[in-house]
Length: 275
Image (cartoon, rainbow, N blue to C red; front, side, top):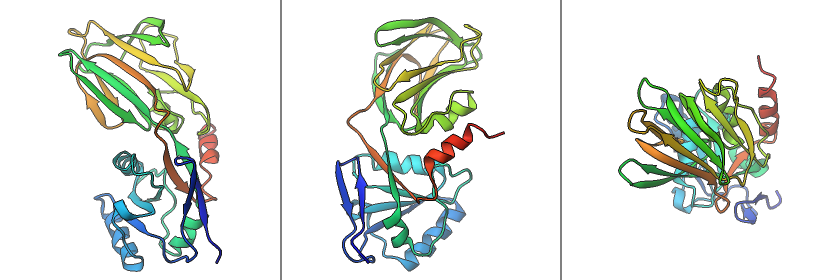
């Protein structure tokens, strides 16, 4: 076998597996589900399991939610992550096959993602920052609709959106909650962000917007005491916000590995024609 290398745009260089196919250092991580734990036991019985801090690549066993958690946990580690589906939908995961894993990793193709960075200010004046690989979502906390002012690049685009909420998502997140909220699906390589309302009441016919990926979006909560709102960057929630600023983090790159036959671009394209 020849030396197998994977180009990684996250580092601007290559990840080299070395000349031997069996000397890859792989870290196996699994969700708590029975299926994921069973797969973990099978794989560590076949291949050496290296601590994630010393590994060349991470294999994540679970569903899309677990994949997101692993990407968050290791966002600064500069390691490619190869997911195998032991969950439900598995949109971000490869098929689970324990055989010939080193060869599969050598053939895998990298996809680089950039996350959103959220800066949320609460009614008490505290500020929290978090990243989102899929989306930053704002939600009403009580039965009353939220009232939100939306500014893009210092220009007020909506003086008042009355809604259950609103979200800003990356192309990777366009097939997640954004899709459920009737937002557009965009190709993974698109240099855009999707701004999508959640159950908008006024303006009744506003369906959202597609923004350039360098846009800076600010959400201001109107009547924040009467109509409290929370903000979520993926799974990280901040309650009782008064303002939320979101932009793409151009300094952070996350690398996922996919089997050539997985073709993430094709799966995203196919979602647009799904019934």
